[in-house]
Length: 150
Image 1 (cartoon, rainbow, N blue to C red):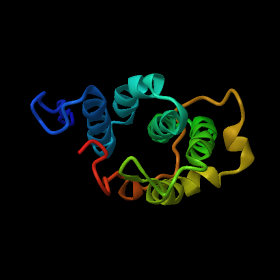
Image 2: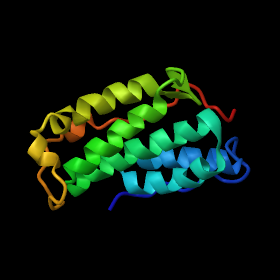
Image 3: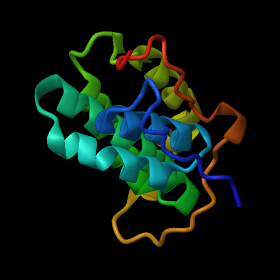
């Protein structure tokens, strides 16, 4: 079982609750704990507005897309990932320290074999647990270009 990172201590440079949740979600995402990353970012999304709200929703949806890979749900991968791409539309290439353009390039590369499956693979009602073509070595990771909270 992977080690779950803890929130930064309250006397750290990332002491604000938003910063704690943001960094915690990044750590979880980079460990491949996509459902947990989505949970870490969800309150941020609910509390944000405008571009920041779309940014957090985009991060959540990329994480959920990758969780759908793990669960073998091709339809979920496709629908949620296409929605994630839309959330990032119009944001700068680097937003809140995240190289969004790089994240999307890496996610595109990792998810392309799934997105290219025959249309029948995305039919409603298909059971989850499909063996999806996914190379774990291509799994996207998020490295901050700059810390938006410092």
